[in-house]
Image (spheres, helix red, strand yellow):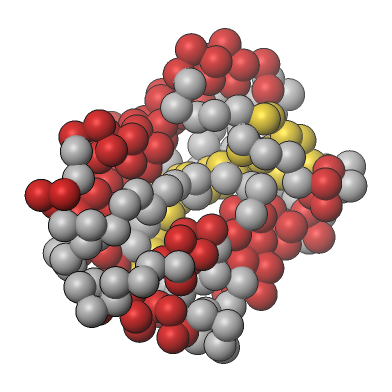
Length: 235
């Protein structure tokens, strides 16, 4: 089984990569940082790359995946939170950065991979329930994840032989949760307090602990309509 995962240096991406490697699958990881632990596995291939550097993605990605005749699973996991502020306090440049990482980098990656590989069985875009509701302070993140949901929906119609899903992983500890944990103004952004309280409890496992549950959810998502949204907690 060939699995490509973005954002493998930490959090969900790291946990999923490690679990797939332990199962003997071939994992192709892309991230800005290298994980020494993942590098120990012979069945791990890594490309150190910033996915928003489109010229490098275009020049380096085809060679990186050249040995894979097909991919059973693509997990588009790399993402950023952006600033937790009211929309009126956030400049367009800051919002553009979130959209670049959470939406456009995924489009760029998909376009190159589909031009190289005709056989891609499943694409999973790691989304969030924040994409379904507006919460004060979460504007850029919510908008970007809503954009990711629609990206999966559009590509599902354009590539009917591949199954696409926008997949919310629930509460999993990650670098994004670290940013949320350090937010002080919880009265202004009450949703952050709930996440802070959940951190370091069984309600928010780390990426390694959550990996088996997430992989099972990804398998189940094949039973959902291609291009739809699902949350692992609702499955």
